Image (cartoon, rainbow, N blue to C red; front, side, top):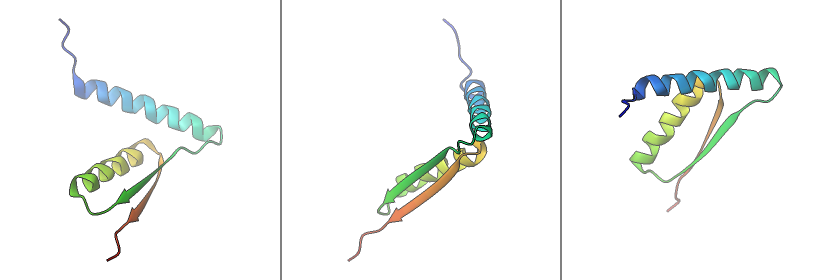
Length: 71
């Protein structure tokens, strides 16, 4: 059985993604993630915040669209 270091693996994947994003930008392609958040679910807000943080770390543009219910 092989033991995998999850933190090291995740770090390696993020470094590779960051390099890929830079290569795309050099080719004139700007990666972007757009998220639509509907409602006020706390767990969803935390998840979306984590995607924003990941995009910032990787150099990916990020847009968040918030939709709230009208009463």
